[in-house]
Length: 66
Length: 344
Image (cartoon, rainbow over all chains, first blue to last red; front, side, top):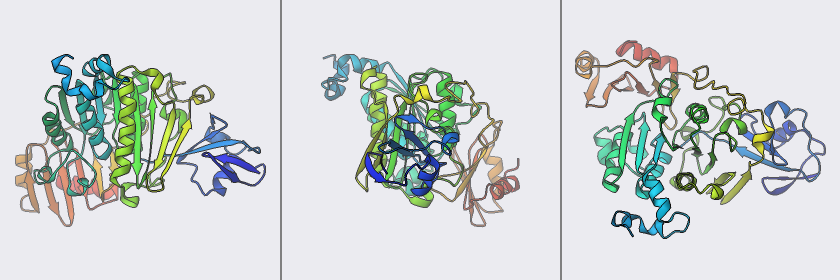
């Protein structure tokens, strides 16, 4: 299925959870914030919150330097 | 135009600021926490813009490898071993002698942050670590002071403006600070000056909007930039505060401020070094300590710092007992060296 990640259309496995998406994209869940259809997703919900066709996701990668 | 305002004429001509906005800037007070790469760009811009009172807080001293990106420093500051806050203040006073500039050479921690930020209209994040940022978030939410998060590493950076209880705070978006070692640092990934300037400039722009009370113009997004890749991304977080049961701005837990989180030994970003801070500041007499250390290694000191080189390690000591130990990554070894040569 297709979802929009940071403004770009991406093909991902159907019905995957947020946690599975992060694993699929090889993103460390400890350093990102995930917004799913304009709502920030608490980390505790990553395991069971699933994606649907056309969902909009924003992944915000945090860094500590400066 | 009022003669005193003429030096700001080009930004007064800008409709978003105007003469009224300029007067607001001159009557405002901003605190810059951390005066490295982001902090020097921020402090320079705020001083030039005529923010009437500026406090620059930094725990570090100027080194040669800072000069690639930390715009307020030069080779003389390196030779003089100046603390960054002091070197920055000296430059800023030459840039704008009509504003009030304070420097504070200290580590920002739970014991001192509330007094450091007291009375501030705005807090600017120029830090290089998550621990201090979560502490700033706690203190600013508690005291309802707007603050602007900014961070960068490599060619990537991001920023968000936080108006406590109105916009999402740092913990609304990222509830838990990433653990040590989980994110790239200046040590592992390096950093280039352009991304520093961009992120700091985004922070300053939002800061100017806050100080001139241009609330409608304030961005309600997190801005992410990778300047090498040429990617510019905005993430709308305007609706996220309602949805999240934030431990800080919803539940009122200030764990970082209460010292329940955070440590007193810090591995420093960008250097092979560890910092040690006392929970209760002590007073170190450099003259007598230098005499003690003279036979053990190479010692030099000025009014602000004492440097001691021994067995490939370089210890820099500040009058309040804080030390930065270079040539070591393990905090435990660092603590051992401190105990051995300075005494705990």
